[in-house]
Amino acid sequence: MTDDSAPAAPRTLAQRVDAWERLVRLDKPIGTLLLLWPTLTALWIAARGAPPLTVVLIFSLGTLLMRSAGCAFNDWADLGYDAHVKRTSRRPLVTGEVTPREALAVGAGLALCAFALVLFTNRATILLAVAALAISIAYPFFKRFFALPQAFLGIAFSFGIPMAFASVRGEVEWPGWPMLAINLLWVMAYDTEYAMVDRDDDVRIGMRTSAITFGRFDIAAIAISYAGYLAGMAWVGRLMALGPVYYAGLLAALACAVYHLWLIRDRDRDACFRAFLHNHWFGFAVFAGTALDYVVRARAWPRLA
Image (cartoon, rainbow, N blue to C red; front, side):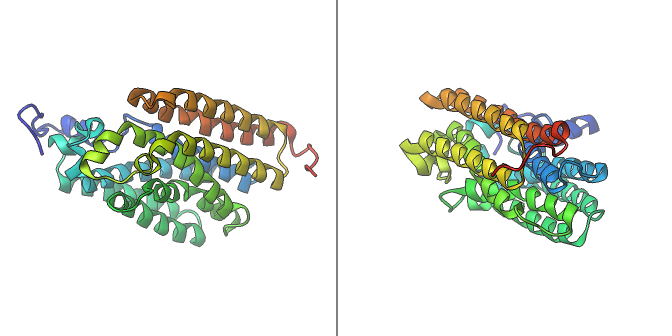
């Protein structure tokens, strides 16, 4: 899997720590943020704008730990493929800086730390955390045969939503599960943009992705996914009697989506990657609108008829 130009396995502790940091993508926080924003949005809605600080800290740190663990497991599962994909060919496992056994150990350790945090919540949240872990571990293998692995990834990336409701209310009350389904559409949009970056390499090695499945309808599918997500979140806002600031956040997210569609119009690899990275601001806009709506209105806005 390595070549003559690949770096030797790290010998010092500092080199090993640096390789582990790159293995779990601590140098690339975009993945953590894409999980964190919808989780915090759900937490604010579930708690009606006043989530306990301890719960916010548990979910924030837990999201970082689980995303990092997921990266380690994903790279271990994809080791036979990553060397043949331009974007992933310099990952530490491919270059030999991290061994497969180390990757599994790091992933397992981080997952255990995340699970330990969940033990400070309640039984419902703990049970959901077990399911979330199983889904995260299974995802890399779905890319081998499932035509739309991004849909399965969306479940893994969205499971913080029902967990947020369970942690605050003791169970997944309405609209926890519908919000998970709605968030799948956003994941489908940004991860299809991500898959467009690797499409040529994925076709060559036989990987299944939404970008390949949608083919020439990829941009249309992304546009529909963004529209479905925003419409769904508008419905959530109506259901939960949220006010103008919330909808302003959705409008800001809509502006981001339009910008992403403009970036990917020619399917340029670098432009598609920039669109993917910019989704951090899309998610932040929705969360900021949600949190600020509760702050500025103090539930003073009338319920929409």
